[in-house]
Image (cartoon, rainbow over all chains, first blue to last red; front, side, top):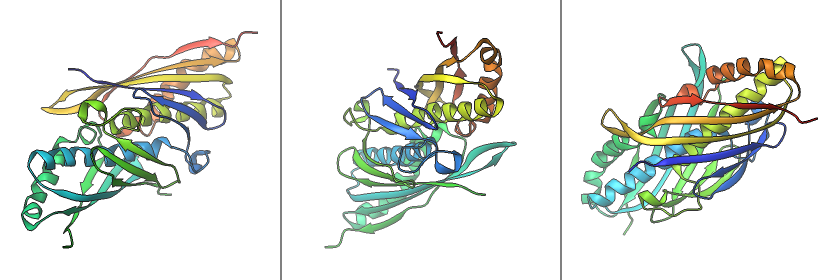
Length: 143
Length: 143
């Protein structure tokens, strides 16, 4: 099966536009302030980092489920750092910080393996050439 | 100046979550239906393609402005194709189809050069390892 992910955008003047996603979500967007846009809108640069952060979570949850690791809570910050690569501006580094709460000691003992597998299998991470760092923090649900 | 693009996510059960962007935008999100989510939400895979599509537009508009090319309308479809790369699932190809209307023949004559420069300077395009194809259509504003 081949999946195609589609987006349609339309410029609305200045550094703003509208976007529609193939699965129905829609939003306005803008350049970030440092590139002439205004805050509060979806930005291309943040969407890039968001896709990494969200896809890693989804991949992790799917693998945890398959392996019977009981995840209670999951949150994650991800930061993308703009820098120079080969004379071009690029997001040179993405750092993902998942904060994961599991049910028991047994779940905790399997967590590193699931995180490592998700790092390898995340399809968005496989699609970028930024340096990727995943540093997770784990805890067990308080009884 | 170093810019850092930040996103924070929180899992909300199933394949859904909430995301907050550093510049203030927020949204719920979900895996796409083929990965256990439901349609209508922001998805990681579409966000990836969106970041390419939006960043190309912003880069193009910025360069057009600098070179005095008068852009009247801009819309663009972008598609990301999920496939296999080195034994991993990845967005192997992103095709961007800008549809650009300019003011005059003179603007039109410079358009290819601006599109090519935007292709080279788009910081999101420089951050991905998918094959990228940009095929634009151009027209002059009807008098």
